[in-house]
Length: 449
Image 1 (cartoon, rainbow, N blue to C red):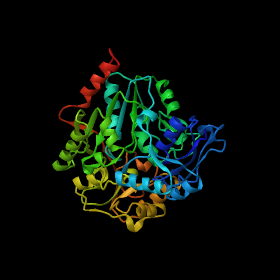
Image 2 (spheres, rainbow, N blue to C red):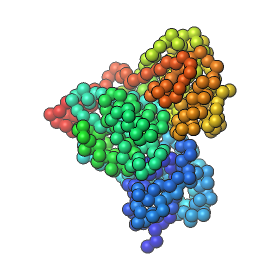
Image 3 (cartoon, helix red, strand yellow):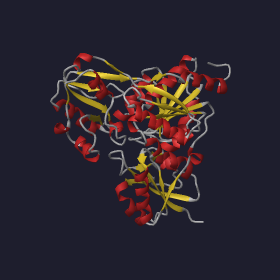
């Protein structure tokens, strides 16, 4: 029986995982191409034969721009298109389905049963309803609490494979030097560095079966695996405890984005974050939606208080706010930690960076015109990092507030007075994650904790 021609619609993450878990050794399908979006300069690459299976894919699998989807379906005689990325509004998903079907192919989705791997260790997943909900700080809080119980936790991060895919098959980060060793982008450093500086080990890469087995057998020991999710994607692993973070600033997303609603339906716990900066109506809307979608989920309320390195650089000053890039772009957030700090500490003006944009940052603002008067710390490659540095130093301001999860000043030379904003998860009221994790340990690691 002839293999069916498949095109995987992705963004360099979930698409590769779906290939590895479902298609790589599947005799019924031949993947003729990937398409890519969201990530700059990802098209024109190949998923290498060493990872794809050289016997079936001796030349690897090409990656094309998603804009050419309809043409590719016709030219490559594609029969099935599998949608394989996240943080997408339902309307956009179905619009893409219309493009696929109009070109003559089937539009399909793979579910958890086909793509979630099982760990030999107890596993906790932290996912979210949108990019920028505070998932990473929640993950750090979970690691901190489990570590206090005497457990060794190894984190595995959702993929961000923007470089040499063969070299990125399995990556282990245990010290800051590993970031340079693995040639990390700013986006990767923002996720890995906060774990490293706290003494945690974190894995990432491309082949998440191989990554999981390496993490389970980490040389420092492993009692619990933590899946630190990305965007609002589903976990790549079966969870023994599923924690999902929701953001009242984008109330309604939990039932209007893919796969936000899937995550909420799978959740054991939903953390409603940022209640300190959200209105009561927004918080109640999220509560109502969770009750409708998954009434069995335990709800934890939390805040994201900011700490500022040098408040005097903000009070009464004209400041440039630099925020986490993906949160502002496909995450569609209008504020971040730097903006919150500027407003709380009385900055005289939040300077609009758009008159000084340089190079690839102009393209970013064209693609995402609603970013507003703040600067996303885009750094997917050397060119973007250079453009970010030039833009920051050109902006007419008194000081720069760095609201990114890493100290951007270590990567970008900022020639102006600058201060950094930190933010962590602060639980409000009961229940708390401490008690929830205590019950998890009793069930899965009796006698520990």
